[in-house]
Image 1: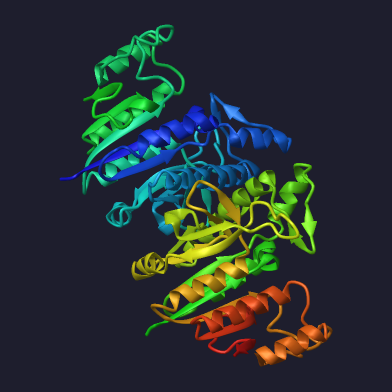
Image 2: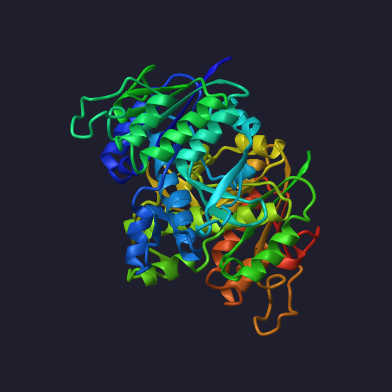
Length: 257
Length: 257
């Protein structure tokens, strides 16, 4: 099977126009079929603040009420997605911006209310891998924003790390999928104070140990869950790496089962 | 050749959730291949106002500075486009939301500065009709927002009536194109005070006469220019009609050369 590279970028890259351009220039160098998944960055929070809306957080996770959803759709599917698409074209990379609602490509359902109601947050049900492949066959690079829908008229805010993992799993039907979570460090650090302490490989057992020891914390934990979820469900490789190494074969930290 | 229906909807329909739903329900009844082009409505102006930005107008046309462009991209390509796409899916209509930047599908250039600099306003150079046809061949309904780009990284605000006309012209290479400008009246009125005074047909000579007499004024004039531009460059029919008649063969007012 042919290889497919799926790259996810997060907030810190999106917030910095120069970093974003460096990243996209590195991204377009990736050979063969590729997909980009982006998060939201702080554009949504900034806009909420300007509009005087309260940002509602619970255990570090945002609660998405109706107004917050509107802002997420505006900034993620509008501003950030189209800016990235336009920049990629300026680098001779033919890109199409997509939300999960477009062609019902990523369908989700409202996250079930347990301890807490996260509001308009969607958990992914299915990814239309065949249609994504048709875009790739047209030499178009899909660029996904973290907005999905339920196919019944409701849009949802959806975690971009999860979207990257679910798209990787679905695309494994057609490709050898290499998934790369790309962030501001060159890999996962064993010691947050030492940027050179990059772990080359992390197994599930390693991850559990690092989580217990508090080395992996906060946003890294769901990222690691998504990484192993992808590996267990079809992805060939999963890495966490820095923006300048994304087009390399073995960048940063590799997760292994 | 097969028929293709292209429908453009404007602000008053987009601003009213109920009208929009009635329209989309009528739109999805259109048989055969179809395309939707939407304007922005007052969502952008409302957001500008909330953010304390001055709306800059010149002869009834908005001047798009950098902040206004950001708001246009957020609201047109984000909120309005994805809301329409999600609503269409709830009506069992498989839709994909597109800006001109997506897959470089509508490329434009910054409007030349003559008397006035309109800022980040794009005039359309080319429409990728072959790619639009490929979406249609996949049974997907393209939904265009009025944002384009120059393929060099710059996004532009672009008149939705013009996008509808240019897409109609380009698609004439593959289809018998029927273009419908859909608005709050059931057609073009000879007498604005009498909603029953719908003109059945308007020729270029009629239009010139009505413009001179002041019957056609303001936003109707560029709409009429776009209508005749489409007819002169390949569209088979052009109508202006109301939202409940859009799926009929001969709704409202027909423009004829």
